[in-house]
Structure formats: structure tokens, C-alpha cells
Amino acid sequence: MGDAKPIECWMTDMDGVLVHEGRLIPGADVFISRLRESGIPFLVLTNNSIYTPRDLQFRLRNTGIDVPCESIWTSALATAAFLDDQRPEGSAYVVGEAGLTTALHEIGYVLTDSDPDYVVLGETRTYSFEAVTTAIRLIDAGARFVATNPDPTGPSSEGVLPATGSVAALISRATGVSPYFIGKPNPLMMRAALNQLKAHSEVTVMVGDRMDTDIVAGLEAGMRTILVLSGIVRAEEVDRFPYRPSRVVASVAELVDEIEGL
Image (cartoon, rainbow, N blue to C red; front, side, top):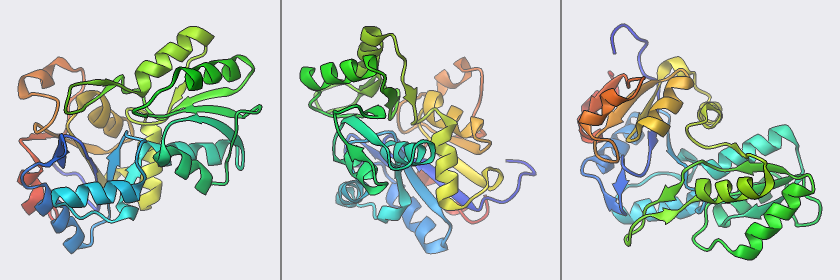
């Protein structure tokens, strides 16, 4: 990384970097342990808005990775931070699960289907026609449309599932209103995470497995970026993008010995 300033903070995506289909990626547990032992501030980021940080902490622990709740930053938390800044103590109709509803409750939002300030769309495994219809009608009536992330699909053991971006497209087609997406690749999520760490982009690195979300979001937020090949993107695909990561490595296992002197 040339003559750049020493790294003082780390951010890393979760799926494809630390875990893959619910299983530990070799070396990820040592990577997180080294970060914790060194005392370097870090955050684990995810566009998944289904789970609370405590839920994710439990799920990661079951794979062998011990991450404190306060070191987990989700698109639901980023969405809550955005709404708290834009319209404090407002109201929202939410299509989503506990990760999103809990984050909004914690900033003092009222969840209602009666003339809400916002319709907030998150990820859920049980999208209902009734809930989507209500969202469409509320947006038609003037509610502002926000979505936690633009991911069109999500993984499962049975194959891909429709995710927030796909349902957002349905609602947009019905209303003519496009949502404001908070999660990656919107650099807003990264800047909110930087604020959470009280860190500066020049001394923070983003580690991710996707060029179109993790790497571009880190790049646009002014951070150095490291692409790992343990997730979505293959090595031969990197040159197809108009932007490049600062580095490409096989997995976070290659970064363990570089944490304090990268």
C-alpha cells in the first residue's frame, strides 16, 4: 500500500470474508482474535438487516468467531442512524424483521401504518403480499421510501432467495417511486461506520469479497480496500471492473501477520 499512512482501524464484510454459508472461512477466527488482542478498533459490516448485533454475535460464535456486539455494524443500524439524523423521533412503516425494528425502536421511532414519515423496507424471509401492498399504498399517500440495501438476492442452503432489492423493485414499479438505499455500496453506510469508530478514512481499510458493494463503497468513502477471493469474486473477474482494490488476497488468513504493520 505504498507510502500510505499506517492502518489504525479495520472494517470487514461478514459473508464471504469471515463465514461462507454459515461456516467459518479458515483463518477468519485468528484474524478477528488478532484484531481484538492488538486493541485496534474494527467493525464487522453486513447488509443483512434481519438480525440484531446480538443475534449475529451468537451466530458468529457458533462458527468459532468471537465478535463483540459493539463491533458489528448492520444496514439496519445504518438506516436507523440515517433516519435519526434526517427526522428525529419520526415514524415508519417497516417491512422487515427484528434487526430493523429493534434499531428503529432504539432511536425512538414509532412503528405505525397510520400516516408514517417513512416506509422502510428491509430483508425478511417471509415477505407478505399484505405488507407489500400496505407499503405501496402508504408511499402513494406520501410516505418517503427508504430501503436498507439494494441486494437483489440472498444466499440460502437451498439456493438464492429474493432480497430487499428485488422487493424494492416491485414497490417502485407499482408506485413510480425509487427508494433511497442505505447499505453498501452507498458510502453513507461506510461513513456512518467511520463515525461509529471515530476513525478517519485515510487510516482505515475495508476488507470485502464483492467488487460491486464492499470495494466500491470503501473506495468512494476514501478508504483503502482489500479484496478477498474467499467469497463471490474470482481473480479473473477483477479486471472487468473500472476500479481496483488496493490489494487482492486469497483470504483474511493472509492478513493476520500484517494487522499491526500493514
